[in-house]
Length: 90
Image (cartoon, rainbow, N blue to C red):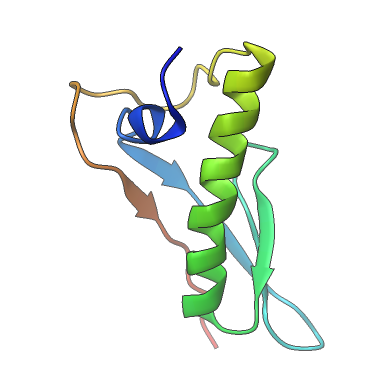
């Protein structure tokens, strides 16, 4: 089995949804990886936490022997990942 870092490099993009919270900060979810849920006090912190959550989700899939979702785009080997970010308009 591949390490989480090896799996991470297979993703071309992961759609993230940043939802502003009434008390401040943002909740981050992903329709591509429903297990990816995190938060942050600022957009930068939320995205940083999303990276950590992404690695944890990939590790979870690996431990469970579960294939990655079919809607995850998988390009050529050794391609870098990019996170597709949705920013709220205020």
